[in-house]
Length: 225
Image 1 (cartoon, rainbow, N blue to C red):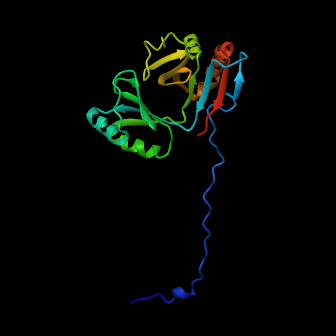
Image 2 (cartoon, rainbow, N blue to C red; image 1 turned 30 degrees about the horizontal axis):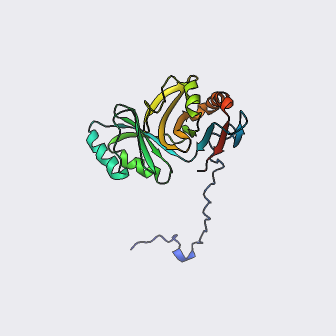
Image 3 (cartoon, helix red, strand yellow; image 1 turned 45 degrees about the vertical axis):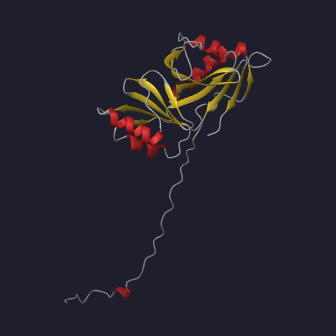
């Protein structure tokens, strides 16, 4: 085999040690959508609070729209979550996930924990157009004996238990702020609602809520993710 006279044997070539750079560490930290807006404590009228608020942290949200063969999507959601897709304004919930009707062939997927959320969305993407919106929304749970009254201040939606049962969903606005809310299982003080508002509008929403709830007294607890 021909070899150049100028070629050096591999044993004589000095070895160069290259240090691998450490992976950069993000300087960004996840903050609650309610940070600097809602605070733990009791506010408004003295005495026992008529309204209780719990901010919901660490939830996963994704909007998805069915592709033409929606029967496949029905089978996929049943297999992945053991839940049926609601076909009318309602929410269907398990302990870990839920589907909120958002329009014909459109839903919002709710996950109580974001663990494995991207993988779940990837599993749905074959049969639906999926968009992860976990960081676009803020959520809270509202309950208490005066809860219906404060909701009535913000919207024309009739939330009386006789016409707005557990599982009912509404898309409306409070003081011109778009919200989506639904009723979950009742608590010791009656009806319990979960309210979803765009993260960019949480300060405006809270300004309306705190003013509207003050006469009833309200207690706030910041949830943990």
